[in-house]
Each structure stands twice: as structure tokens, then as C-alpha cells.
Image (cartoon, rainbow, N blue to C red):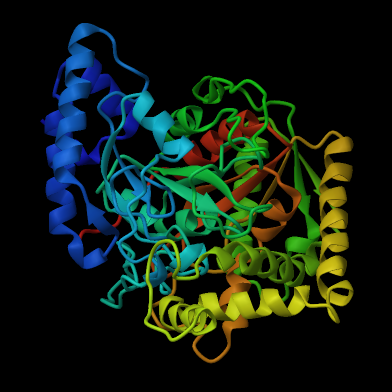
Length: 491
């Protein structure tokens, strides 16, 4: 029998249905893989007993012919999703050993459909980071390495644990969140598939908030089909989340393999940046050629406000973060430092509980919302956001079905290589992804090739609101042309 961890989710589903193996065998294979890969630091909490219990339950349902669409499939859960009875920390010291008494909507839907929880995955603290180096549990290692080098690389962030675990075959898929690229950028760095759905497609209830108008949950998976299967379970209306949209969830898997003939694909001229590496430019051209060969029509489009997206994002996101993180005060849950009075309690708890990047963003956010600067910064950034959204609307109004761009400006870099002296250097990693969050659109990252050092590179497709199906159809074309890549095992 082939190694069970090397199967795609779709292959595992078939094997379980055909009784080739059981969910318990599949789960045990992944639990062993997690144990052998602790050097990657992808999991911050392993739940083997719970995983085996869920697997046995799934096996029982499969035997009775009563199986849900994800019955018996072992998944990893980003530590931003509240899991009932299992520690949830957002990878921050300030939440301490917080154990929720409730389950996030997204994870409860995965369990409803029969999935198995292997454990909680590492992420940047409060999802603030592009490299998974800000976690209080330490950085995550990327299973990929440069040819001939043993330097440990970052897996991207904030969903670095999710991407690393899926790429290293430690789980069949993972939940992730994307506020400015935190699903798509790690997917590109690890040769996995990541989709950020349209804002409102997945419930945010029970997910630790970073920036409420930008955050969106989505899956990271081994293939486009696997991502489609996971999103179908994760998506759906939730009355507990007022931003959740009440529209039917399509059968995303049915979009895989659909013809893309006649689709109009926009190539935005503003994404051709000065100093863009030649290999990123080449990859982009190759991706466009693959879509053209499949019958799509390429058109140049303009998104004139793209250049303002990053600065506007780094005003809006920290402003919302400073408001959301005010609830961590040491009074009701999480860390509590000793103090003589309430003010000192707040100061001491936050000083020792929040990491440097979180403190930086809370301070930026508080500053841009303060009385003298609100109009100059926050209000102006919101106006820019409206213009960014309008750029996309104008493109789609001209009949463009999707927009093709690079996913990241480079391949993965080494731990500690970026952002030490200048945090802006790290923020530039999000240059191709933040516009999608600012406009609330769906975006998918698909592995498309490798750089000169053998590291994976991804392409991004941006779609119309609630048209994830088109992204899956187009993503499948790129996946078929590029093939699938797996890292050489070194751990």
C-alpha cells in the first residue's frame, strides 16, 4: 500500500469509501508523521487521543453508509480558530492557556462533515506577520530548502503552520485565515494551494479577530480539488456573524475540469513592479500562456490605485487591530500580571503578553485613530480602499472573469533574513495580495513553478465576488500545466 500520508484528500476519500484502509489507519499515519516532523514546529498542540476517537466515529459512519463529505479525513486547525475543550492561544502569550467552551463555526462545520482534528497549528501572533516568526511558540520551518543548502526557510505567514504541515504531508488539509495574504503567500512559499474566499463567504464567528473588515477563513490543501472540497464544508451563512452572507454554497468540486474557453483573463499592468525578479515575470508569462492554450482570452487591464494599497492596508488593519485587541486586559481570561491597581494591571499584562510586532501594530493603529490624525490617516485610507474596490469593479464590468498576477514578489527566504532593522521590508511581501482583502474579493494561489534555487513559486487568480468556482476552474488549468511539487524530505 502507498504511504497513506502522500495521498491527496480526494484520493483518501476514495480509499475510505472503497474500504482500502480505515480512517484510524489514515489518522495514525499522520500522527506518526507529525511526531517525526516536530523540528518544523508546525503544530503547537497535538490532539492524538481526540483524533483517534473522531477517526473511530468516522469509521463507524462509513461502515453504516452514513458518511459526511469529509468523513475520516485528518486535518490541522490554525490556532486562531476556537476549538471547544482544546487550548486556543492565537500563538500569543497573552491568551496563556485559554481553553474555549465553544467551537468556531468553520471548525464545527468540518466536524459535522466527519473530518478528524489532528491538532492546532502554529501561526504568527494574532495573525500579524508574513513569515510565521512572531509566534510565541517560535518560528515555523518550511519543508522546502534551497538546492544544496540546509538553511531553514520561513513558510510564509501568518498561516505558516498550516502551509508547512500540508506541504510536509502532516495533514490532508488545514484551516487558515487571510487578512492581507496570510493564506495565499504561505501557499506560494510551500507549493500548496490556498484560497481566500470572498469576504462574508465563511463565518468569522469563533475566530480570534485581527482586522474584522479584512479577515476571512479559507483552506490550504495539496491540490485545487482538495481546496474545493474543504471550502464547500467551511463556507455557508451563519446568523452569529452579521458579515456572513446568506447565499447558497455551490458544489465547488464540480467546477474542477470545467472548460475555461472564452473566459477573459485580466493582466494588470500595475503589478509589473520595478525591480521584479525576472523569474517572477517569466512565471507570470508562462501562467498566462497556459490559460491562453486552454482557450482563455488575455486582456491587459488597469488597476490604477494598486500603488496605494499597501500603505492604506497598513493603516486600516492596525486601526482595527488596536480596537479588537483592547479586550486582552488581564481581567477575564488569559495572562494576568500582578499589579497595584487596574491601570498597572493593563500595562503590565499587555507589556509582557504581547510580542513586538503586535505592540507595533497596536501603537500604529491607536495613533491613526487618535483625534488629531483620524482624518489625515484612517479616513483617507478608507477612501483609498473604496477606489481600490472600484478599480476591480470597473475591470469586471468590462467582462473580465478573473485577474492573473504573481502571488509573491519572491520565493521563501531564510528565518531572520528580513525585517530585522526595517519592518517595512517584511510588509512588502504582501504587495500582490492586500488589494484582494481591501476589495473583499476571492483570490487563489496555485503552485506554478520553481526559482533558480529550486524553491516553489505561485501564481494568484483574483475573481469576482462570490465566484470562487471560476477560480477553481482556472486554478486547475495552471495546476495541470505546472504539475505538483513536493519537498525533498530532510526532517
